[in-house]
Length: 640
Ligand SMILES: Cc1ncc(C[n+]2csc(CCOP(=O)(O)OP(=O)(O)O)c2C)c(N)n1
Ligand SMILES: [Mg+2]
Image 1 (cartoon, rainbow, N blue to C red):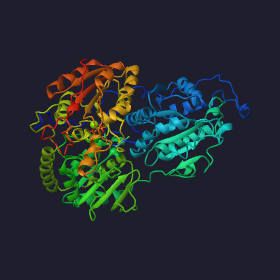
Image 2 (spheres, protein in one colour):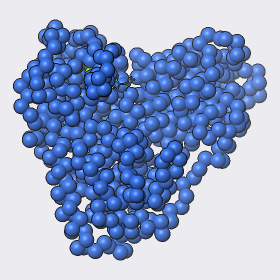
Image 3 (tube, protein in one colour):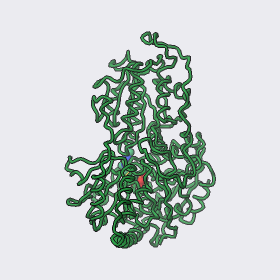
Image 4 (tube, rainbow, N blue to C red):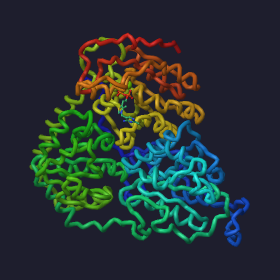
């Protein structure tokens, strides 16, 4: 049994109100605000940069294009720009610095894109990553994809070859809009100073309208030092533009329709009439800062809540109506409860492959309502919801709560539902204990590490998670207490954990920040430890080391296939951390875990805790029963 305490707190996320939310909850529990995002946009000051473009000589604007871009992005809420620089956008770097945006050098553009994505999620405003030409853009791609899957309006700015060299097989030339840009929600190449202002405005709007998503802006090198023009122009439809909206004009960006009370009433009736109704809540709830209100709605209806995959922080786990997270590595009770539901209210969740258990939820015949900025439509073999409501979750829940106040649910019905939910809750808690078993083998028990994290981390601590089976114990066994305290890409992108943690520590310097990683994923971006050291942020990285791409080996073993490409060698991660100026701690036994975590959290320095994990630990669904110690696990660990 877990010895960690169940927390019953239910305060709202301490984060700035989302621009699209319109409504914010009371701020009980607010203890800090993101660094650098509370101030008003910096005033635009004069820039004496020389005008080089004869076409813009007549323009009285004293700013360069690079500076004008920076000012526009700053006004849109950008405070951080993560980059591996290139000679193709020096003018933009100048502009960013002058505008007061913090430029953070990273060790790989993938890290920069993950940092920008995480910083955007935590600030609620589009943050930036910058890269050079085809080589840098290609490295950004993984983060743009992750941001798209997570509906994050991050902005990728890519330096392009000078306009006079376009189409001539120039150095590192590629069609950036038509290649990497297609991973974004929208992409544009700006080809004239007079189009800059309108292109930036459109990019910010497209990123944040409807279902949010990343945008890519390609900027020819020679443009950036030119004198900025006063505005006008706009992007030429169909020219240098890609994405779901094709050549749509900016006027074509959809606006949210007015909420119809009759439709909301029909959603409430659907849930009120159900016997085994359930609410499935996703990232849209966190984005709308509506977690507490969603729990109020759940209480008013007497309907329990399940979180979307990798969104376990959407509501506080101590709440008696919380029944766990859906998807890969969820407790078995979660799928069972969703499958037997006779009505589902999906709030701000995309119902992706993982959350929907490969599209088995909602089950055919189950009546369900989808409230989302872009609710599901029929197609690709999927059916439309019984009721679709295009809305920000905060607005919907406010309306729903006021309608419910007018005609409260029969008290007896609610009581019966609470009793049923209490039984469901007991089943969920029993099925989500991860620290049991009689493991006495070598290395750590991953579930016990999670229990220790629960003991030591504060309610506001931010946890980031890389991709791999090690994460299963965390997903199932950790108990989140505050919304917005978990960052994990639904794209399952390896290499995300550490960069996202660095961004979180920059945005919230006073919070505990812990990255949970496997040896495979951590090694993909551990070079960013030096970034953490240079930036002076205190992040703790827990590395579960089974010296293999364990998740993929599990699939190979299950399917009786060759064990090809899944075994890895040893890395002394603690020594690697020290080599980059961070602290490194090696852990080989459970009894070393509490002190290691304590020391790491207290140090105020970036720290890697390298944890040896026996390969007998395959997944949270396949706990280790036998000791299968492989000789190579006895890595030579240097003492700190
Ligand atoms: C960038 C990327 N490449 C490949 C994959 C496929 N993949 C998913 S999990 C995994 C193994 C992860 O290994 P590790 O981080 O050591 O965690 P473990 O599975 O061993 O717990 C791989 C290769 C991925 N998700 N992301
Ligand atoms: Mg591994």
